[in-house]
Image 1 (tube, rainbow, N blue to C red):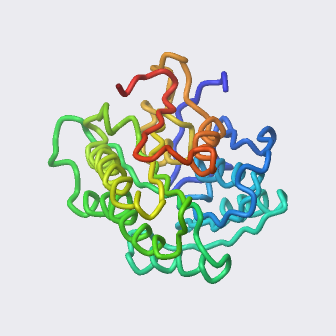
Image 2: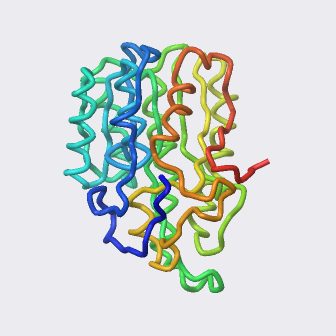
Length: 283
């Protein structure tokens, strides 16, 4: 994308069709090669943004996809259409992952429909930009909700999924450049993303003897509905231009990282964090 985002705002949780310019999810470009043939996959936050791009790529690589999402029904239906257009099953599961019971229900639905879980992608997240100078500006319930959605939900989905995962299965958690380069105006979000790194490192060690791998993908500034629905207009305008590549990333540009980590080609990769940040280092 060479066109820079203009100032714009959306209501939470955001809508793909309202984005200007439109995001690229790879539906017109991603070519699969059977790398995930027959795999049963679960993706949270799969209705839009990075989750939609990963769902499209997984389907085109031969995987069936459980699409977990909050309430963006139109976006979710479009993602399901693109998965099914690729000849794979799409199973829609709406609900709030901040609820532990719903996390377990997502996995139960996957097992009911697909018989097992081969790949779990914990991608759904909540953020809200606040003033960078006053911690008092962060409401208590917003802090709690951010942690419940971004990290506690991962605990519940992983705990529910592991009994249904065989050796060779893969867990992929979406963290962020914010884990290493935190922005004060995103304090709760950045803190959860750092926790995800630690959680994933522990999972890699805990689950290794079962043959289950756990890794992270760390996006930089990616153009998704989350941006105009959670950030002020002056931060949306020119979003991502501070990267060395001079632009925000597109959801499609992350898909290959998730495919690689989900595939059998990554059989000795566990405990890793892949940065997709437009050149901003997280060393």
